[in-house]
Image (cartoon, rainbow, N blue to C red):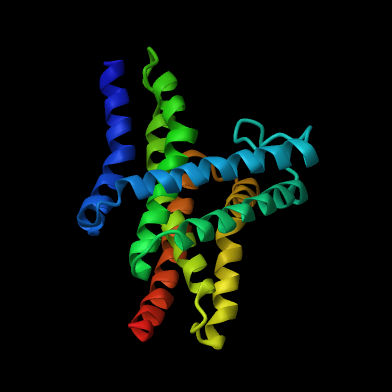
Length: 230
C-alpha cells in the first residue's frame, strides 16, 4: 500500500513533465540532454544561493505552516531577493541553446522545473510517501510540482522577453513587474497565508490560481512578441 501511494505521488509529479516534453515537440529535437544540462545549471545556482543564505542569513529559518507566528516579512523578502540568481542562470541556459525562442523557453523552463522537483521533492516523497500511514501532504507536494512547471515556464518566458532587443518599450514595465511577481511569489504566498490564515488545500489552490493568472498574462505578451519576431 505504501509503495502504491508513493507510485501515485511520483506519477502525479512526473507525468506532466513527460506530457510537456512529448507534446510540445521537444522529443523531436532530441532535447533531453539539453534539459539535463539546464538542470545542472539549476543545481549550481542553488549551491550559490545556499552559500549566500548561509552567509547573510545564518540564523534565519523558513516560514512554516506548523509555526505561523515565526514570520518576518522583511526577512522573507530579503531571502527571496537571492532567488534573482535564478534569472541569471536561466539567461545563461538559453544563451547556450540554439533554436527558436519557444524551444529555448521550453528546454530551459522544463529542465529547471525538473531539477527543482528532483532536488527538492523526490527525497521527501521517497521517505514520506512510503510511510506506514497515508498523508495528504505528499499529494499536495505532487500538485505543487505541477504548479512549478507553470511557474518556471513563465519565468523563463519573461527572461527571454527581457533579453529581446525588439521588445516594445511599452511592454518593458509589464515584463519587469511580472518578473518581480514571479521572483517574490513565495513571500507573497506566505504573507497571504499568514494574513488570511490559508493553509493546506486552500493555500495550494491560491498558489495554483496565482501562478496560472500570471502565466496567462505572460503567455499573452509572449505570443504578441513572438508573432512580431516571426
